[in-house]
Image (cartoon, rainbow, N blue to C red):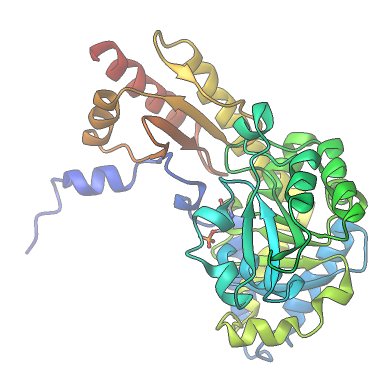
Length: 364
Ligand SMILES: *Cc1c(COP(=O)(O)O)cnc(C)c1O
C-alpha cells in the first residue's frame, strides 16, 4: 500500500498556479457545464451537423453583429495555418512581425498548409517593433520593396491581437494597417489567440477591431481563455471561406464529435463570460506588474496591456525561481522573462509569485 500522508514535492508544485502560459489553466466551470450538457444530450449528428455547433455559430454571429462564416478546429496553429492557406496561393506571401506566432512558433505550419506561401517578416522599427506590432509604413515598405515576378507576391497582412508581447493594437492602429492593406489589395488575417484579452483591454465592441476595421478573417482563441480545447475561425469576408471545410478535414482538424469543441463556447458567450475571464486575467497581470514595479533592480520590459508581464531577470534569479518549482518562459533571449496570467489566476498566486521574485532578487 502506498503512503498517502506525505505529498511528494512534485505534487506540491503540480497544483501550484503557474505563470508560464495561460494554457496551463484548466477549463472554466461554465465551459465544463456545456461540455457535460452536450454529452448528456445523447446521440447527435457528427462532423459539425449537430445543433450545438449551429447554436454556437449563431451566437458568434450575434457577438460580432454580422453574418460571418464560423469553423472550429483543435488549436491555434491549425486555425492560423488553414486560414492563411485559404487567403493565399503558393506563390503569395504573408507580411507579419518578427515575433509573430506564425513565424516563430508554428513549425512552418502556415507555409506547409499553403503549399509554400512565404512569410515576409517586417520590422516596423522603433516603439512599434518593441511592442511587437506592425505599422502601415512597415507593410508598405515590404510591398513596394519589389514588384517583379521573382519575389513572392504579398497577399496577406497578419496582425496578432493581443500581440505576442502582451500589447494591444488600438482600433486606430488596426485601421491604419488595414487601410494600407486595402491600398495594396492585401487581405487581413488576425491571430486572436488572445483576442478576448485585447477586447477586454480596449473595452470596445469586438466588431470594432475586426470586420468594421477591415479584418477579413479572425482566429478567435478559446483555449487560453477557459475552454478545454478549440479555436474558432471566423470569416467576415465569406467569399474567402469557400472550400474551407475541405481544408479542415484534410488537415485532420475536423472533429467528428464536434459538439465537444463547440458547446463549451456557449458558456463563454453567455453573459459575456469570455470578456469577464479575459478581464480577470488582464487585472491579475496589472496586479503582478504593480508588485514587480516595487522590486529594486528589476526592470519591466513592455507595457502590460493584456495578460502578460515582461521583466528582465538576472540568470541567477531565474535559476533560483525555477529550482523553487516556478515555471515561466525566458521569452526574450538574455533574461527577458514572460509571466502570463490566466482566467483563474488568483490574487494569492500573484502575490506569492511576486514575493518569490522579490526574495530571489534580494539574494541575487
Ligand atoms: C497560443 C498561441 C497560438 C495558438 O497556439 P496552439 O498551441 O497551436 O494552440 C497562436 N497564436 C498566438 C499568438 C498564441 O499565443
